[in-house]
Image 1 (cartoon, rainbow, N blue to C red):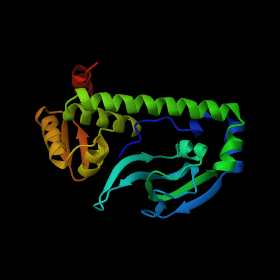
Image 2: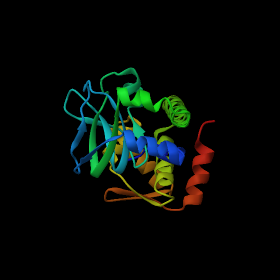
Image 3: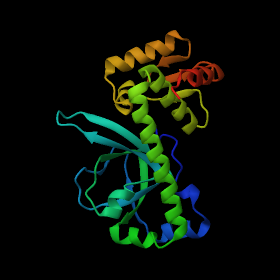
Image 4: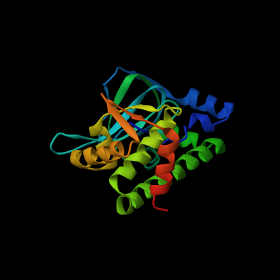
Length: 221
């Protein structure tokens, strides 16, 4: 799973702004796998993950869940919904024991009175928009195995450069918006090229420098 290496809200704030968030947040704790929110819930509130993590998913009509993104400690979600006071757009589940500070619409508007918080939210929104545009470009122009390699590179960066990445094939397929068959072919292409090894619930990058060089040469620019 991945957060697309997005900067964390807390990491962009100075001590005074972090104190504001801590003072105004409504804290809740969730057990591993517990439902954090449901799509359509009218009680919009920006969440900041303090401990643990959550995964945002889209529930499909046939009962399947489409994995969208993970939110890790220090990161936030649902700020746009909260600003517009709109219903929640995704289901969310806790990954491990998870602690979240919530900021409902009324409190969120108080946060916007602090320029440092506004600047941080704008920086993260700009990053996320750039990532979304990049992903749309990749869908039109980049082969699945290259899109997968880009995703693995982001996950590796989020894991501090670790060469072993814990993940599930179906979650990777969901994140990239491809079928299980297409994901299997993409994994095979990277294995055949000697770039990765697949294990139980994991993918290992064999030679990071060669992997990075291959990816740099393969990405459409």
